[in-house]
Amino acid sequence: MSWEQQPGYWQEPGHQQPQYPQYQQQSYTQPAYAHSYEPVPADPQPYEQPTYHQGYGQEYGYPAHAQQEPVPQPLAPAPPAAAEAEEEKPPPRPPGRDRYFDTLRAVALIRVVGYHTFGWAWAGMVFPSMGIMFALAGTLMAKSLERPARQVVRGRLRRLLPPFWFWGFFVVLAMLIHDWMPGWKIVYWIVPLGDPPGSAWAEQAWEILWYLRTYLWFVLLSPLLLKIFRPAPVAVLLLSLAPILVLHFLWEPPDDRLGSALTDLATFLFCWILGFAHRDGVLARLRPFAVAALSLAAIGFAGWYALTHQAETGSYDLDDIPLAQALWSAGYVTLLMWAKSYFGIDFAWLTRFRRTDRIVTIFNSRAVTIYLWHEIALILAVPLIDQLWNVPAFETYLPLESQWFMFGVGWILIAVFVLLCGWVEDVAGRKKPTLLPGGRPASP
Image 1 (spheres, helix red, strand yellow):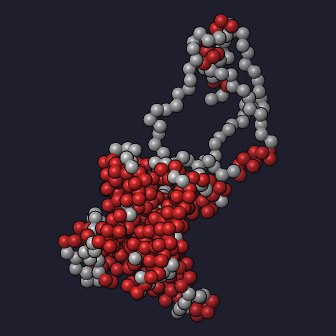
Image 2 (cartoon, one colour):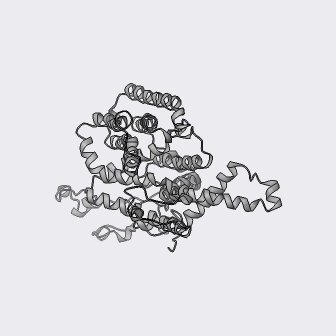
Image 3 (cartoon, one colour):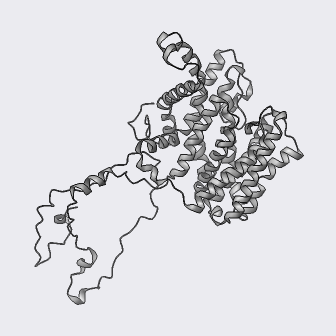
C-alpha cells in the first residue's frame, strides 16, 4: 500500500502530503523460495495488531486515528553493493523443516542403496540407516499426534499406501507374467500388515517391504505407545529394549509372518520411542555423562555380540543379528538425537549450498519412491551394463566390471524413477504433482 493510499491519513485538515520522488517508483518484493516444502498449516489464531486506548494522546491535541496508524517513514535506498549481496543470500526457509534430520534421512537412503549394491557387512555399523529412519519417523509421529489420533493415522496411511500400490502394480504384474500363482495372502499387497507374498524370481524387489510393514504397525500403535510413554518417559524408553531381550533369550518367535513382524517391531521399538523422547524434550534434560556412558555401552556390547556370533549367521552383518542390531542402533541413534537436542544442531548452514540443499530436499520429498524403486533400479542396471559390453568404446574406456560403476548406473535409474513415479507421493500428500520438488508440474 503506498503512502497516498493510507486511509484517512493525509486527509486531516492542515496536513500536506510530502513528496518523495526518488521513492515513488521503487517497490520492494520478497524473494521467492527456491525450494518446495510441505505447506505449513495456517495459525488457527491469526496475529492481530495491538490496539491502543481510543482516548490516548487526545489530551495533547492528536487526532484519534493518528495513534492507531503510525506514520510510515520513507526507506533509504540501499547501496548497490548491499543490494547485490542481499540478492545472493539464500531465501529464508519455511518453518517446520529441520535440515539436520533431513540430512540424516538423505544419508540413510544413500547408505541403503550402497549396502544393497556392495553388500558391505560393516555398513550397518558405520551408519545404522533403518534405526535412524525409524527414530526420525517417531519424532514426526509424536509431533503429528498433537492433532486427533484418527486423523493422523488416516493421513499417514493415505501418504504411504498410494506409492506402495503404484509400485506394487508393476511388481505383481511382472511376477504374474513369470508364472507366479498367488493365494489369498495377496491381500497383503493391499495393506501390508504382513509381508506381501512373492515369487523367488522377484525376491530382490519385494524383500525390502519389511520396512513398510514395520512402519505401518508403528503408526497404528503410536497413539497407544505415546500414552504409555509420557507418564514415565525415561523408564519406558529403557524398557522398550525388553521385547528384543525376551525374543532372544526367553522365547523364540515362530518362523513365519507373525514371527518376522514381532522381531522387527522389537528390534526398532527403542528407536521409534526415542523419537518421542526427542520431540517431548526428554533427551535435552538427560545428563551428558549418563547418555554417553549408556550409549557407548550398548554399542560396545552389540559389536562384541555380532563379532562373536558370526558362526551362527555366517557374518557380523547387523541385519542378520536382531539383538546386535537393536542395541547398536539404540546407542548410535541416541547419540545423534541427544546431540541434536543438547547442542541445538540444525544444519542451517546447508541453505548456503543451493545444489546440495536441493538434493537433500528431493531425497526427503521422494523418500518412499527412492526406497521402493532402488532395488528395481539395481536389478535393471545389470542387463543394461551387459549391453554396454557390446560397444567396443565402452568396453575399452568404461569400468564396466566395477561395482562402483553399477552403483552410479543404479543412481541414474533411480533418478529416472523419481522423475517418472515421484509425483505419486505428491498426489498422496494432496499436493500439486511435480517432476521434482520446486520444479514444474507433472501430469500423472
